[in-house]
Image 1 (cartoon, one colour):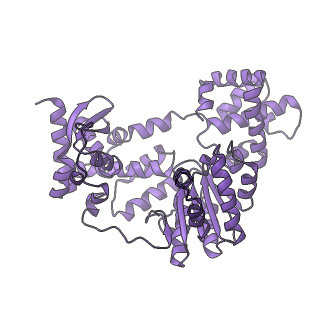
Image 2 (image 1 turned 135 degrees about the vertical axis):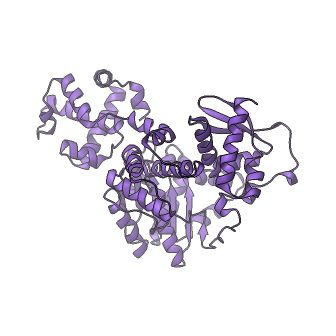
Image 3 (image 1 turned 30 degrees about the vertical axis):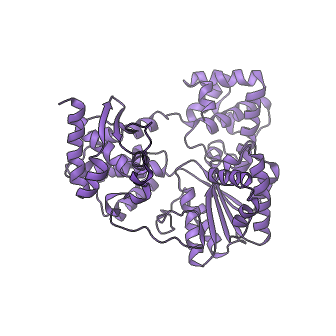
Length: 465
């Protein structure tokens, strides 16, 4: 028997014990065939494109990866290929994804009925009750609750921005759930879905139906508004939809990975409309907040792990809440697959290796950036916080602000403002100016890239920021 087959059969043995449902195991796990394995991934073969697509999106993907980790001692991704992919299958022989269980616990449950007042899909877990409030999100949480109390009048529109995985969509949809309880009509859609729907409406000459669909709701929620950039036709359509809703005091909530004013390619009139309401930033949670979120999620699932493990995860998985929850699920699955055996730091480092390594690679600090800038311009670090307009101080200060904004993981405007004793507006103005100079002024570009080199970074790090 090959090593690949041994690994897969051992993993299946672990999975059978965890899933504890013979039908699910036989139909959706055992049917996978191992094709190849290397240091980074294992490739499994299935008979249906539908099954492949469903497995990619299901909770079983992480369970299979965890089982492979346990039996092989090395973490690997899981990928699927379809047998005889070029051979078409009769439609009646394919199992639709909607007929497949999402996870073992749901394999015999029917999905909750759709609310007729809801356009789009709301995550049933994205409620206020399931949202953990802390210093990094309390203001945004309060703003969202104020919208529930006075939709269309308090903070309209509400514009929530911040890095991925911090809970922007969760809070937005929590408002949606509450307004549905009030028998309001709500709509949730991502910008990508909105663009596709708008394009199809034009193609099929159904633009009037498209407009009526989103202009006759009490709450319109749009995710990832930054992808409006450069989409002139969609921006024109949404401008009029925004006005129609706002005129009749209908609530609008949007999310973005940056403030509206920083979205390149977004029309000024839209930026102006978005800024008429309230823009709030979701910041990365600190250690105490991450620990509280982790413990809440564990308690909600009636699962306990050693306190040492809780602290290790909270201290090392810092990027966002989504990664924190992913780390928790891995740890739980690992314990289940190992019959609840003791969980030490070495095991945690193994199963969370990719999350920890990614986080530890981001070891740059604001102090390191400030020192590198001051060394280059030959000024004192304390000069950066001085209230002076002397150009020999202003240029280093603005350069340091710009590099903090584009290089640091916690690069929110308020957090940088605290470092330099400046306001949110000061930081934004300086970063906007330096970004423009970096792209247009040769001397500025050379200065910035020299400082990057001293920090062990390259211009590519700016482009990827």
